[in-house]
Length: 512
Picture 1 (cartoon, rainbow, N blue to C red):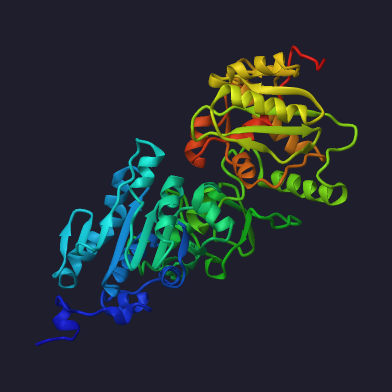
Picture 2: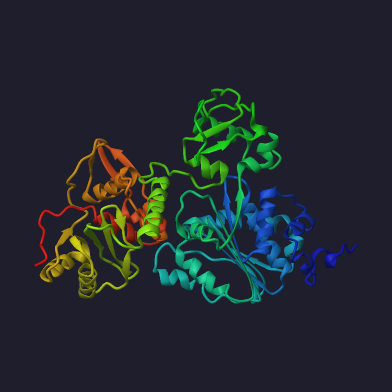
């Protein structure tokens, strides 16, 4: 007996009636139900060119994304769906394609007219859903090329673990979405405010959907209504272990949340089996940053061992705006600048000149190119166009010849090797290398100097809030530059130039 949609589901089955109803497709065709947060994510993909889904752990984002992929593939007969996840390849195979594989296995009738292969489901040569691996090695251009040139009447890109996907992938996808009906879904746990996924939200270039443990039916009801998803017990345990109630007179801030009413009186036990007392109503302070992204699906207000607080950065930015509104973009009268000159080492790096007049920092000057002579000439021109007392110049690698060249052209230039021994100590301990000391000096300047002012440079601000630090055997070590590059998907050239303004020269070469 034939059961509509061409005998459930023949080659000519037409699902186009669901083009505006991804949730209905899942409920009617897949016979599933979804949480309210997952529904919002699905409907956002329907309605918006770009959707950013920030998710707590185990709230169903990858499960929902697989349903979005199948809905789009079946509802638009002339479509192409490209899926990817941050390296390694196992992220793509085990997570998103693990969900897609389960759908194929559980709904064979839906895919009986398709050709199904590893990481590929095909209706025809021009209509398919496929997995694209992002190579861990190779150049940025090679990674970009893997996602360039995708064209179809209907395009969907799904990126899992999107916060760790290189910027060049986003650049390639953007070019593909310049025409026609195109959609991009980016999913991730919001661990740090960095990368293109974060910038999309910051710059209002995407519709943002949050998936919080506090909104999940398992946590709300206290029952495991969605097997394998986050539970109330785990959530309550994390509140007890990673948060504390506010004390009398303490006001909530950006690191606080109000306990949902349905969790008042909830109990749990530690992983060792020790019971916790019932949760009391009111506000809680987040003590472990992982709580923010694992439970709330939000960026931590303060990263784990963050070197520089976002609040310090925000205050310095606000001061700059107030100062400029009163005085214009002019350095304080009677001050002279210390110049920090970061020198590009590779093709993707940039040269950056930073001029700091006491607490006032000019807008940064930057240019591309790794020709040492051209860099030196430009640095000299920037130096001579201002009242500068000292130029601290990156003397690592290709930059080693820049300071001597500037000296020969009557500039007070000090070569700085950031891997050399530190020159200062702090009450918290010594520093491993000079680079650690310079970053710490920037931290203390922003933390304690009421005159610290930062210009409106979003990339600089992003770079300043990335690094963490640790104290090992009495020595302070800040996040390594390679780790910062990996998180930012670029070199922190702007912040490095600011750090250089805090170096001290033993030998000055005065202007003659």
